[in-house]
Every structure is written in C-alpha cells, then in structure tokens.
Amino acid sequence: MSTPRMRLNGLRQNTVGHTAMGLWRHPDSRAHEYRTIRHWVETAQILERGGFDALFIADALGPLEVYQGSVAAALRDGIQTPTGNPLLVIPAMAAVTRRLGFAVTVSTTYEQPYALARTMTTLDHLTEGRIGWNVVTSALDSAARNLGLDRQIPHDERYLIADEFMDVTYKLWEGSWEDGAVVRDAEAGVFADPAKVHAIEHRGTYFSVPGIALSEPSVQRTPVIFQAGSSSSGSSFAGRHAEGVFVSTYKAEMACDLSRRFRAQAAAHGRDPQELKIFAIATVVTGATDEAAQDRLKDLQSYTSLEGSLARWSALLDIDLAGLDPDKPLRHAETEGIRGLVDVFTTMDPDREWTPRSLAQFVGVGGGGPVFVGSPARVADEMEQWMEIAEIDGFNLADPIAPAGHREFVDLVVPELRRRGRVWNEYEGETLREYFRGAGLTRVADTHPAAAHRR
Image (cartoon, rainbow, N blue to C red; front, side, top):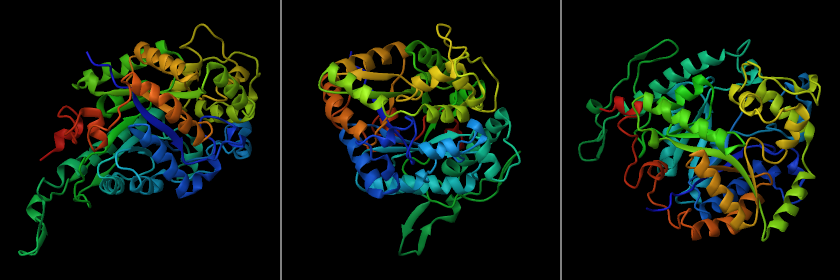
C-alpha cells in the first residue's frame, strides 16, 4: 500500500498581517512588499519548488473595526488593512510557474455570478487550468456597510444566496457552451457555432441571468471549488459544492470531528466523501535542530502583537474583546460572525477556559491552527501524526514572516517529506483539478452539482 500524499497549499493574503500579528516588524519579513509583483513571483516559485498543490489567497472586503469600535488597532498592526485585490496577482505568478495552482477567495455576497463566471474562466485560461475558487459569504459588518448594505445579511440567508449563485455559475460554465462550440473555421468564416451556444435562462430568488456565458469554456470549465465555513449552513454548503475544504482548529481530534462532518455532508448530497479533500491551517517553525527551531520560535514570539491579535479575533468572532475582562473566560456566543471560530475557542475544548489574554497569546504566531516546531524530522513526524489523527488530506501552511517561512519549510522540511514519499517530486497532471482527482480528470466529478448542467 502506497504512502498517502501530503497535499500542501501555501496560505497568504494580499496584505501585511494575516495569521501572525506584528511579525511584519521581524527583520526577515518582507510582507510589506505584498504590493509588488516581484514578491508574489518569488512566493509562487518557492512553493512550486516545494511541490505545493496551490497557493491559497485569503481575502476580506472590509477593515477590522470591532475591537474598541475602531480600525485604529488594525491599521497600527497592518492587519488585513491595507490590502490588495487577490485576483490581480495571479497572472504574474502563473507566468513564472508551470504547475502551481491558485485558489482565490471571492465572496458570493458582493459579486454578480454573471461577471464572476467570466473572471474565473479568464483566469483558468491564463493559468491553463490551475484556478480554484474559495467560496465565502463574507462575515464582516464593515464590508456590508461599505458595499451598499445598511447591515449584514443574516448568516443563513447568505448561504441561500450562495447556493443560487453557484447554480448560476455552473449553468454558465458547464451548460452554455457545448464542447466543440468553438470551431475556428477560417474558410467558412465561423469562429463559434451559434447552434452550440445556449442562453441559460436563469430566473431565481436572488439572480436573473437570461443570457449566454461571455467566455468560451476553459480546460476545467468550473474552477476547483473550495470552502471554509464550519457552521451548520457552511458544512452543508461544503457537502454539496466543495472539492476542497479548509478547517481551522488547533487539535487533531477536533479536526477529525470536522472532517467526518464534512464528509458525511458530502455523502448526504450523493457524492463520494473521499472526493472531498480536507486541509488544516498550520504554521511550521523549523531549523537544523530542535534547539534551533525553538530559538526561532522564541525570536518570532518576541515580535507578536497582543493588541493586534485581539483586534483580528474581535472581528472574526464579532465580539469586542477589548470590552471584556482580559482574564475572564469566554463563553459561547451566537453572532453573525464566523460561528465556527467561536466553537473552536469555547464549546469544542472542555479542557481549557479561554480568556481574551490567553487567546491573543496563543494565536500570536500560528493564528487558527497548530504550530509545528522542530527539526525537519520532528516537524515531518508531527505533520504525519496530525494528518492521520485528523483524517485530513494535507495542510494550508501559513507564513508568519513572508516569504522566509515558506522558503525555510521548502528548503528544510520538504526534502524530509519527499524522502518519506509524502510530497511528490514531479506534479502528476497539469491542472489543479487533476491534483485532486487524478491525471486526465480535468472536469468536475459526475456526482458534483455542476455536472448536472453539462450538455
């Protein structure tokens, strides 16, 4: 029996501070170069050299302003503000790589499916089939207020909108243009056969899209679909639509519960649960020896910002942690924020009482997942053990001191993982979906809801 491959994605956001607060001040960090093409080109080349499946680019459409009712703390620490558009850096990275995929976050709450379908198809063309879409519904009230709403759309309704949004895009990607619609017959003067291009005639609760898709089909047609919500609505959505799921928790046993829930949802929607690939957020701090890695961790921790961590998690939890006693235990709260994260820090861990202070200290470097610290052999051991207990397929690896953290992982840990047969030496397939389904399988599985719209 062959050793299961450890699937790796790099985790970044087009900003200064994402999962580690304050570490942009570290002398090894060049996170402030996020606004340059050369920074993203270097990042992509590092990840492809390490055999990563993809770079996953997170995004947020509003500033973090729950903490103390102000954006001030987020600005001081560069937490998701300032930020750039994640879509625009992808073509530059695709131009300097051959196999690395790109999973980009786009919200169904503030986009239109007709326009986004064209954007994603264009990116799939430009990357030659290496695009994935991380579907989010956007939880920040600041995004709602700045994008034309008086208040945030309720959590469960956002997922109803997202469901219809997906149906529209599937119709555009899979059902509008038949295979062979583009004939490029110069002699007859016909580029596309009108008889093979169809209006989708969608009229639903939230969207009306009567026409044809503007773009000719790309190699994948539908991009690889990712999702990260762990609420009941989010996990049901993932079970229907997702091909890859991101989980955020710091215990392997907790990740296992989530993995089983997501796969059960996939089965309930008539899909093969093993076609759902699950990735856990993690951070690696490594060195030539265990002692060197521990020294590296202490060095990183000396740059963390407690206020920055509280500001980030205040927005994610939709609770102003500044208004709470920093040493008083948090209790479960229903919010319009990301409910799954509330569970992570309260109801799902009976062994620890979380306070605002302990929460901020804990997430200072790792932010939402385990921190593997040690020599390459120790890190590989812990990643393998975590993967087995959690029943996951791989990791989204954050970089607290971009791009140095990813480079250190690729230079030190990846050779050890390759020696163990965990990371491939050569990519198998040419498209992102082939990394999920196998060489030659560029289209969604027959049991995926997008497949129902094929002509």
